[in-house]
Length: 108
Image (cartoon, rainbow, N blue to C red):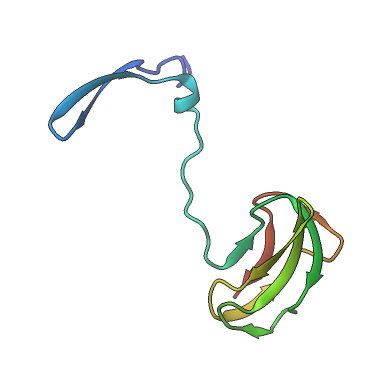
């Protein structure tokens, strides 16, 4: 018997001393665990094309400095540094199509 078929469908949840009956689905049982974001990585927030990269590996940047330009949905999005740091790697290159969640820049 696999974990999904062994799922208990009727569950009682207590919120503020009030009991609620609920049913859990297979989709809920198979959901991915939450992984907190890595503050050392700048991820792509929307699919698009990298137009310009303003930094290079080893360069020190301050919060708000321009890192790169991402062209998405006919708009240029200026990606800025979320914090002070040093650029470790830049996997994204100008002209590259990137997807949501892809690493654009990694800090040390």
